[in-house]
Length: 114
Length: 112
Image 1 (cartoon, rainbow over the protein chains, first blue to last red):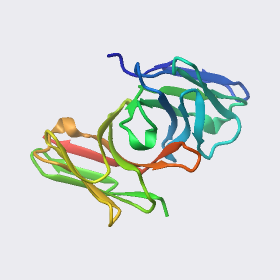
Image 2: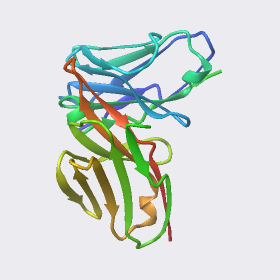
Image 3: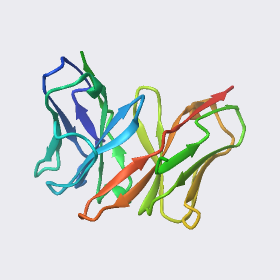
Image 4: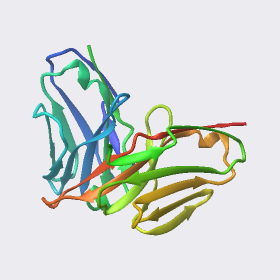
């Protein structure tokens, strides 16, 4: 069974640009969650999607958005990039809601904002 | 105060030693997760538990719901166990969603 995949793996952008990251969950998993990891803040919850609906959102500005498609694939978008958005962005999938099911993580997208 | 506190932050052990990493939390949870992150970023879920104790190979995880505390034990530690171990609590929200809240992680180094 294929694992969670994320594309691209590495991305370099400049301030003010926007970026779209993609996550393909394990087949049969309906829940996709996104996380940001930085050296200073550690791992932080961004969003949770379940059956194409955003079920929960973390404490991030509106520049961070996402969606989930009918095949459970998910994208997240960050507009008007800031230097502080440089981070490893991880997605994870599970059959049920993230809070109560084993999470399977993707390899992450490392975003660098210059 | 963080909702999830881990200790110690850093741990160095000799191969073969018994290792314990602790996690305390201050909120109601649906489940507690132990994760392992190797250099390069990949995260693997080791355990998800909501009560009692689970064992997988040399790894044992326990949770005490009343005391809001969990421990991860590694028996007969090996250099390949060197990684960051992260405790995360799962919470079900009011809007039919959920979220994970993470501890800061414990950097474990096992020397041969």
